[in-house]
Length: 353
Ligand code: ATP
Image (cartoon, rainbow, N blue to C red; front, side):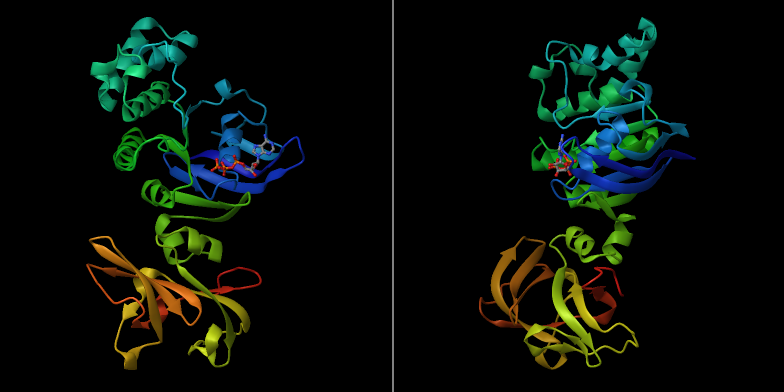
């Protein structure tokens, strides 16, 4: 069953700015979809249109088949978790979680059962009588989730819920959110600008660029076969090495006269963007090398080492496992295995191979 359908959904703000031209997206029951993209790409706008906090300028939104464009947020059977948690500071944790149910006239004993259950699941039982001011950031985040969970909504909407937590807690809460969502099986739409968070949480990702869905797919689809240089650069850390080049009969001609011979009978000729991920470059002997990297900086991360340098005048990053300490300014000979190449048409920005 498809829980949420966006058909050509668009948003033009009152000042005439078109934040979302047109997005199509179908979310299956129980699916975890992450909207990801840089600041200002329209993630929150899209989420808020699904929530009913922002009007839909064009297209159609359906939840469980029902047309939702003009329904109030309370009538959409959704529950939203905000970045700032939006807890009531004067209420206890219990009352914060119970509030929405009380408003709907749910009987007191049912509320108590539900809140107790969810508090148990989130490890909040001991904290039910505290006020938000007496909680840590992670605990507040859990209360905000608990408040959404007690309502048993059709869809959870998350707007950057982890951005106020420190790095370690983010990782912990990320795992918790994923486990909880799997257990509950609630359809989820989650917004983040953090590609690692997006990759680890999502069943499918929607990469937004200037209000357009550049690609929709599983984390591995996006990693292995990014549809555009934008997606290629956005997914993966450090970013894919992308170099403007020309595809000719000789092969891929990189700037500075370097040629990577191709054996493809590809009909495409002309301006391309050639890419390879930092983890796919192999360090080899000079005789086996495709090119040399002049090393400019080395970042030792313990388990891996990032080596930054230039090939000709192009910046290139290499990611090696384990510790390495090459000298700055020395040359590192590199092989770029063909099966790891990514090639995009520079004009259309579409993937060629
Ligand atoms: P961030 O990650 O920084 O929160 P975002 O991807 O969530 O960004 P949105 O908040 O959806 O982006 O904004 C998308 C675009 O719409 C931005 O260019 C923003 O300036 C613009 N925008 C947002 N709200 C309004 C508004 N009320 N009126 C006009 N333009 C707006």
